[in-house]
Length: 280
Image 1 (tube, rainbow, N blue to C red):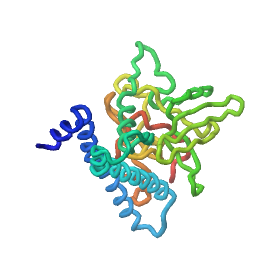
Image 2: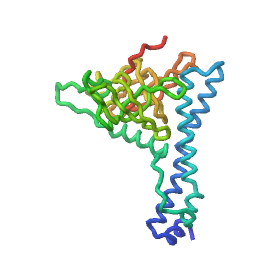
Image 3: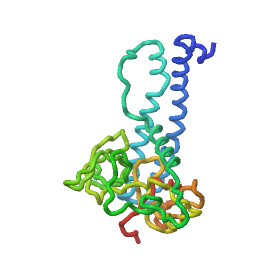
Image 4: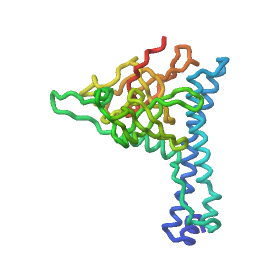
């Protein structure tokens, strides 16, 4: 009798299939973590040419190692032994499940959010509105609870970094936001002034009809580094050519002779303007 038949026979088709899906999720978790582990290795290789860890590397590695730690924990939780123990009734099914979202699931949700961002389609002569593509929010705009934003926060070691966050509330009395770190592994709530919060685009700009609503080649931006929840400074290598395309960006990286990484793709949803001056 195969494992699927055994599980179905022991707990009924619905329960058995549930556990089979848990087992298959282990392999998916491992596959998702491979990209991040390779990224860590490559980053360390690039650092060998320097005698110190730059602020850029410190911030980047912090995000990558946080992801790797969460991936490892998720893989352990999804492994076969706890699942087999549960099937055998060796621990109490009535214990409430943990609320923390698996890292791989979070990355998938972020990708889906980018893919499902609506494309702005205006009437002839209409100009794209604020928060369409590269067009910033109006000066009096206030992000709503639940909106995703780029937020500049202080890390434990005192360094500042831009993270992906969710708006909890806004106080008109203090002109400050309360935001939650989107990364549930280090779930923190931050109180931030408006200048430390950048609303993310609410529509994709259509390159074929509204190219002016996109960031252009060599423009300085903040972009979400792949497989992390942190934004880093980058240059636009190439804007999208079709509505479904991503930006191609060059992240600032001092380990390369020209100071920038090879091109990486980042969705319109996660690219915002950087008001800081370009490094020379």
